[in-house]
Length: 355
Ligand code: MRU
Image 1 (cartoon, rainbow, N blue to C red):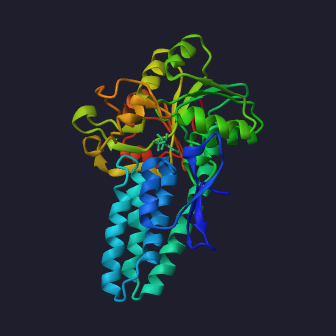
Image 2 (tube, rainbow, N blue to C red):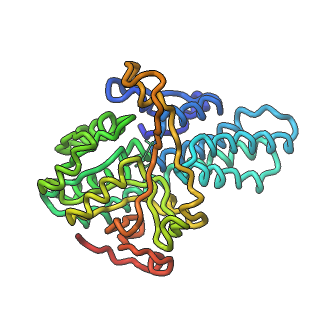
Image 3 (tube, helix red, strand yellow):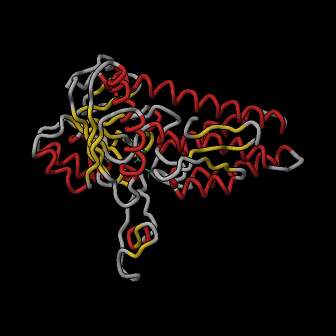
């Protein structure tokens, strides 16, 4: 199945429950808007494009669960639910932007049944579009890799972070389809271990030779010449760096990404960001992007076992900011771009580059 989809029989959202991986591959049914918000916050569904689909289906779910009789009251209630879904996690732009896209359907509706039908149809289109563009993105990115390359990746930007196929791991799968033997070094990705729990599961299922490392070993791996390219996804890319980064763009991705980018730069390892245009926020600057802060207990405990004294002060940001000066290639569904990404060049470039 896809990472997230609509269950017609139960008339609700069904998703792979990623909190259970790798021990169990199970699904979770979000029957209500509250179930969906909880799923987003617990990371049952996670990864920017999958969160976009969750937001899109979430508006359809809100429209189906709302029992108002009058259309105006219905629209008001769906908008309130949509707002709660859009803000369930702040950093990945896809969540709020796809909520907005589906919500806009309501403007063209004049009855509750029509609104229910149109919001679900639009959400299905968004989910299908994600799969199609990831395939295109993967093919562009695969051109950057040579047979025999070893790619380091961080967190999980695979099929399970999207509706299907993935972005960073989609590049690996497309290279594999093109007949290239590509190996992967997967960073564990503390504290929630998306690399260890999810990326390795996915890659092994695809028959990709994979080595898991602790995050802190990435420097040694690059120093020892074990890495030909680092390929990661993104939660939000801005083209305006704001006060902190000036006129260069910034990639917000899983905490630790910046560390790997700095080390890759030090060792001349190409640093590649693979993300769809839907992850590029052209409206905000880096100053306006909120980095999600997670529960301190994610560090004070490991899988329910105490890892630090209960009252330890904790700083637990979920994402960090990598300036474009550290990014060698940005791969999207329309091609491969070499920063600096001045807006015009970014929109005009169409010829894929090669590493
Ligand atoms: O906290 P998560 O697991 O949602 O973080 C996911 C990432 O940081 C991914 O790299 C990003 O969303 C890109 S997914 C194609």
